Length: 371
Image 1: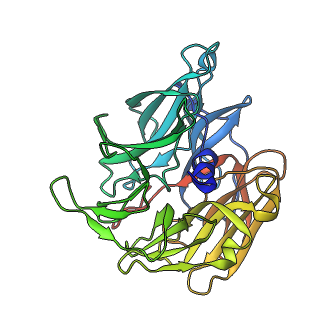
Image 2: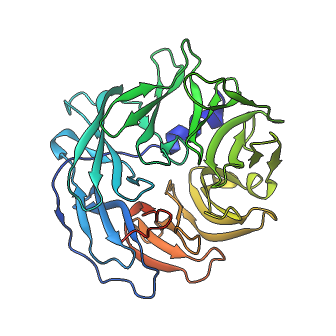
C-alpha cells in the first residue's frame, strides 16, 4: 500500500461519544449570516459533544455527551439528505486499562434531538477509524441507508478497508468482495448506485446485486475517491503512485490533473459545490506536511485557487457548502481552539460563527426547505 493510501484514512480519523440530551450555554449569536442549521462537534469541559445550532449561533442544543468512564468521543455527525436524521459514531472502550480493545457504535437521532437509537456495534482494534462520509459513501440519496467504512492495520502490518451498507434499523450488509482484496473507496452516486474503487484500481458502478457492474476505464491509475458531483458526471480523486489531485470524467474515464493543487498541497478532503463549478479542499502544504494546514476554494474549469485560511499545526477539518452553494463553512484553529467560519466562494464576507469543529450544513430537500 502506498503512502497516500495510508495517509488518507489516518487523517480522516475522528474520535467518538455517549448519551444525555440538553441545552448548551450559547454564545452571542452572529449577525448578518445566512439562515440555516448546523450539526457539529463542540468542546464542553474539554470533551467533545455532538450539538446542533442555527448558523447565527442561536438555539444551541446538545445531542450527545460522552461516557467519560469509557473514554468516549463522538465522530463528525452527518445530516441525512432529507434533513430528518443525524448519524454519528462513538468509540467505546470497555476497559480503560486495555485501550487496544475498542467498540464502535453507530447512532441515529432525530433532528429535534429525540429518538436516539443504536444502529451499529462493531468490535475493532485500536487502529480502527471511522472513515469520513464524503470519502467513504455516506448517506444514500433517499436517506434510507448509509455506508460505514473502517481502515485497520493487521498484526502482520498489512492494512485493509471494509465497507458495510447499514439501514435505519441497523441491518448491515458487507460490501467487500470475497475473497479479498478489499475496496479502497465506496461512494453513493446521486441516483443511488454505488461507485466502487478496488485495491487494483478498477472502478465499477454497481446497479444492484443481480446486475452486471459497469466498468469505468480510467486513463490514469486512480487511488482514492473524495466526492461525486451532484450531476453524477465527475469525481474528485487522487492518482495511485503520486499525490496528483484532479477530476475524473466518470462517463469517459478521462482524468484531468489539477497541478495548481497537486504541486503545493496534500489534499485531506475535497467537496464539490452543489452546482459543480467550484470545490473546497482542505489539506497540508507539501513544504510543511502535517505541521501546517490550508483551506481553499477552487474554480473547476480554470483551476484558480482562492485561499480562505491557512495556519500552523495539524488540522483535519470538514468543509461544507450551503444548499444553494452561496456560502461555505470551514474550520480555523489559529486562535487556540477550533472555530467555525463562514465565507462566500470568492473569500469575501468571511465571518466567525462559533466555537466548534466538523460542521455539516442541514440539507434542504427539493421542494421543501428545512426549517
